[in-house]
Length: 115
Length: 116
Image (cartoon, rainbow over all chains, first blue to last red):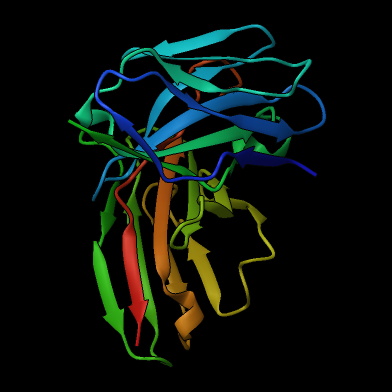
């Protein structure tokens, strides 16, 4: 079946530290991959996405590269800020024509950035 | 457009009562999804609609749960005879029709249900 596994949190970093949150997936075919972020008290927001192998998604200083050979989509940021404190979810989506575009999420990784 | 709207934001109910949640998707988004998120977990798919047709239901959606989207616009999710295990955040998302790149889902802020 399809599944997503993320590194467990919480991850605690100092401001300006380098961030990596690991994400690996299991899926048949060619899923699209996403990172969503959930700030305290808010809904899920799309952070970045990649739709095919070797694509790099980027937004707000965050990056993730779709690695089909390692079935991974690790999230990175070179210098985190306190405002990046949130829960990050990795997700995959099968093609729209297959399973209607529903998302399969990892369990989430909480990031806490200290000043 | 203000995005996906869910109502209420919070609901506390006694075990055995029925509850109903509403979701207003982004205008002209044909697809509407319901997910459930429990504490410390990622959202889990419950069901989705394409216009007014409910095309898929998860096994998580027991017979106490029913969802509707009667006119292809807003949707309701009803839980009958609530149980404490139903306590969770219920998320709604919508996306446009199509298979292209820009068909990602936009999420509402969720309805947090507490069954006491």
